Image 1 (cartoon, one colour):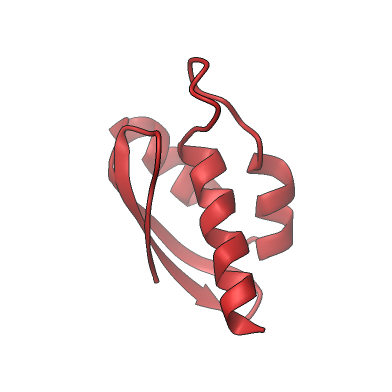
Image 2 (cartoon, rainbow, N blue to C red; image 1 turned 60 degrees about the vertical axis):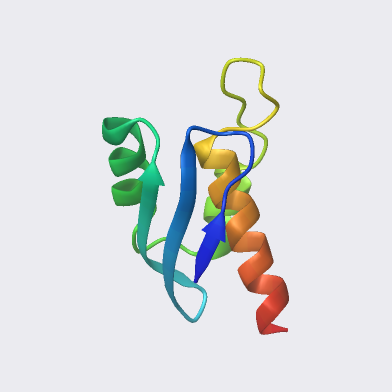
Length: 82
């Protein structure tokens, strides 16, 4: 799945899921070290746990962030599977 981000430096998030587990995440653009760190930390986690931890994270008063956009992408993936 590819999610087009809104309001962040990253332009998109590429997701690979295995059932309810995050298999891999790749941010296109954004702060390279931070996005790689987030992608590594969430690998192998349950989708709901990632959403709970990252949803609502703000970057510089933008009202969103790369972690928040990842949570939004995972919410959309869950909705599409139902």
